[in-house]
Amino acid sequence: MAANPLGPTLETERLILRPPVLEDFEGVAELLADEEAARHIGGHMPREAAWRRFLQMPGAWAMQGFAMFSVVDKASGRWLGRAGPWQPEGWPGTEVGWSFLRSAWGKGYAREAAIAAIDWSFDHLGWTEVIHSIAPANTASQALAARLGSVNRGPGRLPPPHQDSPVDIWGQSREEWRARRASL
Image (cartoon, rainbow, N blue to C red):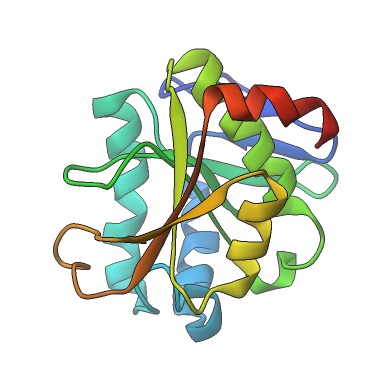
């Protein structure tokens, strides 16, 4: 696999995490077309709007030097979702988030990818904390955040156009993460 000029490639036991490439758009379009899978990430949208959303990640990689990684299954090469650091203008903190195709749910991919992304965010970006902005109705992401050691810090607020979307801020410090990292 050729190096991606936008950023690093991380590997876990089952996954490859790398900055997005053009071929990932089909997976992003599938994710954002799925009403259930996109419910807590701004809602489902048509392919044309998904294209604009897709371009946010390579743009953030180019401008900020980080963004969510595309998460690819090592065995099949299939795009499964995305996970990683995210901090657009006005965001409530240094977030590590995740979103996956429904076909990837319940297999531990989000946990595996989030662990790698949190490690990378602390080690390479120098972050002192990570948060996860999670809708109160998103019990699956709440459970994952808790498994990662994050705690619900209470209601938060996202910047426009999402300012009216209810969200709780889950998080932990770098020291808390490192103290429990070996047990994950």
